[in-house]
Image (tube, rainbow, N blue to C red; front, side, top):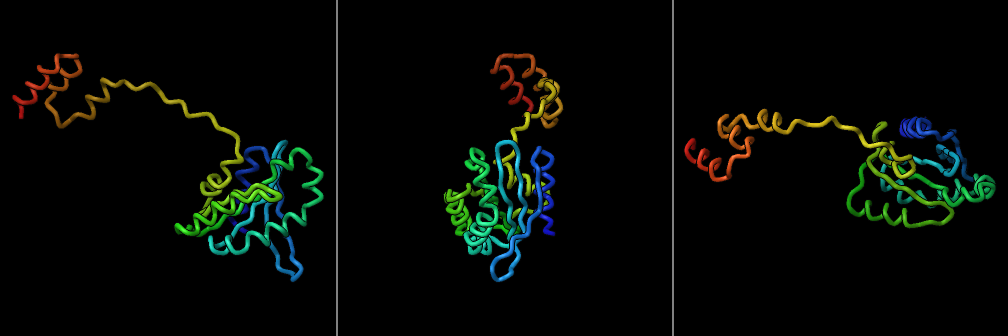
Amino acid sequence: MNDILKHCEGVLSQTGFSTHFAEIRSDDGKALEALAFEDATILGFVVVYETPAQLITSWKADHDRVAMKYRDALQAARKKAWNAYLVLVSRGSADFGESLALGQIEENLEAMRKITKAGVTGVAGARTALLPLLPFRAAPSLDPINMRLEIELRSTELDADVVAAFLSNAEEGVVMQMLEDRA
């Protein structure tokens, strides 16, 4: 089993998708590992390649294999079929030309929407590749910052009296004169 597919399965499961691994055989017996996923509004498949070049040369045939294998499920999905995705990822990073080709694949909306991502490794890479499908997460809440204290702590190169004058809202000319006198 492909480790990137396992990472994708973990990310999708954590966000409420049901998942299952699938092996799709071609007429010549070649197996394609895929991860099928679905929630209340989205369904799709993840396929992993070693390199962007392999993704670019194989995606269309693999797309057709997945679409043929799951055509009944895609037709039965009705409205959800509008939210059918094929996520195509590669472990290897893409060069400029390959990045352009990946973008062109995403523009192909035949049967399913496409998401492409190169350089996918680990759970973080899987999360990044699947980000367009994941629900929004709340922004982190940050504690308020005491700006006066932050300025005092970070301005260790300046004379303490100059910093104190700056923080006391002294006239700009006074602070500038203090800087010139201590230079």
